[in-house]
Amino acid sequence: MCGIAGVVGHIAPLDAEAAVKKMVQVLARRGPDSEGIEILAGAVLGHRRLAIFDVSQAGRQPMVSTDGLTGIVFNGAIYNFRDLRAELIARGYSFASHTDTEVLLHGYREWGIDKLISRLRGMFAFGLWDSRTRRLYLVRDRLGVKPLVYTVRDGMLAFASTVSALRTAGYVSDLDENAVIDFLEFGFVTDERSIYRGAEKVPAASIVEWCDGTLTSRTYWTSPLPDASHAPTFPEAVKETERLILRAVESRLHADVPVGALLSGGIDSALVCWAIAKLGANITAYTVGTPGDPWDETEDSTATAQLLGIEHRVLEMSAGEGADIQELVSAYAEPFACASALGMLRVSRAVAQSAKVLLTGDGGDDVFLGYPEHRNLWLAETFSSVLPSAAADCWYGIRSRFPRIGLLRRAATFLDYATGGLGILVDSRNGFSSYLCYGVLGNRLLTFSTNLNKIPISIDAGRRILHDFLDYHLKTQFVGEYLTKVDGATMHYAVEARSPFLDHSLWEFASSLPAGLRLHRGRLKAILRELVRERIGWTVARRKKRGFGIPVRRWIAGAWSPLLESVLHESILDKEGWISSRAALNLLKLAKTRGWGPDVLWYILVLELWARRG
Image 1 (cartoon, one colour):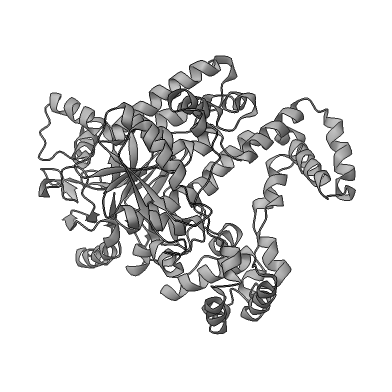
Image 2: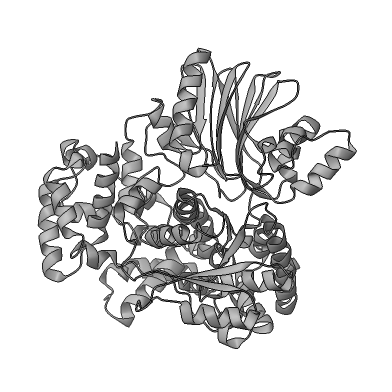
């Protein structure tokens, strides 16, 4: 894990160097171990290093080829770099370090960019400059684990790990209205946008190529579709999942610094720790305990550790410790209101004292279908497949008059999904309408609206609603919220997070399985639960998903209300026309009488504090 930056194209070398120096300073927390800047013909590259492989000076970046014509700055980890290194040595290449970065540099020379990327297993974001062809390649890993942003103007391109680095260098400054709406809608900015106008995010699984002012982008990987015709049996799926998890965990244990694992009370992290024990690795599992907190998982995690026979440490915190909004604002380059990020920051801060690499269970729910909505959408999809098209027309005729109270509301929602598909689902979750309802928008946003409710509605869409939802979720919440949450929190404390469930081979296998197999007998995450039952025990397999509970709706009307009231009286957002502070203050008064506040107020508070950061 590191911070990367660079400037290429038509710009004075001294100006480019000054800009890159500013960017790498902003990225210091991502790489506290060292800083490097290299000037090549046509490019200046900058790097902040978090040393994981080969912590000696031989592994410093930017890394430049011996002829000085190719340079690279890299963020991430290539788990199969040792195999690739051996292959390149056999082809006559010599290495000065034992890093994955040098493998990328020589691998590009040997195979070219596309063939190199196809060989990589890992999480990565890198910029590679080839002076011979005057080409810059910006590459992001298959699932988008590591961030990478860029901007193009006046014949030059600047890139960095975060958009805040681009802003500090003066390349972007104005907020993008559509991105602000994104944030107000979701509590995060999706990967389709950047909070600053003119900045772009390299999409997951993409190569952005720049050559003398010409910019192109191409996708090099897509998640496979379910294939019922070649689906394994359930026992076969469990067995193959076990093999792939063991392989993914083994590759992520390699590092030249202390490695730990996060152990919660759930099944995903339990599987990761089981694999660690199975592989015979001497790794400590960490649990952040919050005594007295209803979400405390100490008892469950301790029991799991005892079953596995692994070393286990509980890092205790008080239930109220660390819920620091300012920390949340400073850790993320864009406004980010994911409440569980407050918990992830607490975890990262605690673990950073003992480990520099942390294995986590992130991603298991998303690809093995662990959320209740996955089962609900699968049932709606199944029902829709046998529903006559005429029945959908009948439902459309009466749905507006159908009572939506209690169980009837659930039935109506089910029929909506079965007959309308993703369009109805997304429209029903349109949080932006709340701002209009509460009247808290400023004049600057009243003329803007979200495009999400324009997704076509039809019974054909209902027959594929789970598939469409998974694709939509992967491109929005999964990358924009889940992966951003982990990257921002861990990098804020210079910890490298690695999740075996984000291994692309494991992901490809799980994605290819029909939903009915992943939800075998209607059980969420059925394959993983069966594997836990076989290898750890039923007690762990039956546990429900839990996590850090941050009651922001209650706190916004209670402990945090003085802060919100204070900033609203001198609101930057109000002055710039984004919100109406008077309407927000009225809403806060109502929230205080009720004892809870809507997400609207929480999002406004985060955006206001982020805007004040400057």
